[in-house]
Image (cartoon, rainbow, N blue to C red; front, side, top):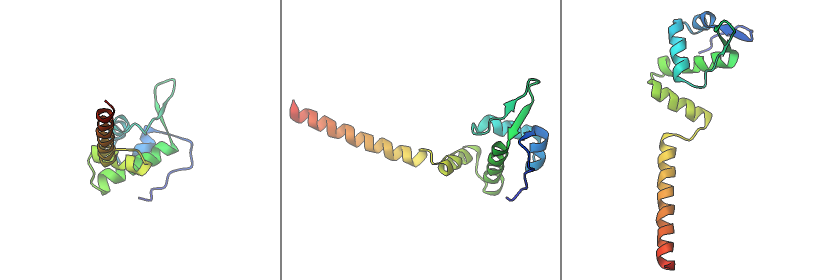
Amino acid sequence: MDVPIPKKTYFRIGEVSKILSVDPYVVRYWESEFKSVKPIRTKSDQRLYRRKDVEELLTIKKLLYSDKYTISGAKRQLSKIRGDVIGDDQDRDRGLLLEIKKGLREIRDIVS
């Protein structure tokens, strides 16, 4: 998705929705679901999105619309992109911890 982002520092929600070709309520919903999108608020409580927020929203749109992920699937995919520990990695880590715990119990039984 090569959508040109204007060379600006901040974008209002109307501008972001036009760049993404979605309604403003969709942008607000994605903002509430994906914690990586954090617009700043003006004194009049208007949202101002930074360039990195718009880029993140473009990635989210691609995951949801083009790649057909669900919201939770898109969250997992974003975490994988960012290198966070999730899903299968957590299961692997849990198994490793259970093996360590079992080994420690065996050592305790030998010592006692």
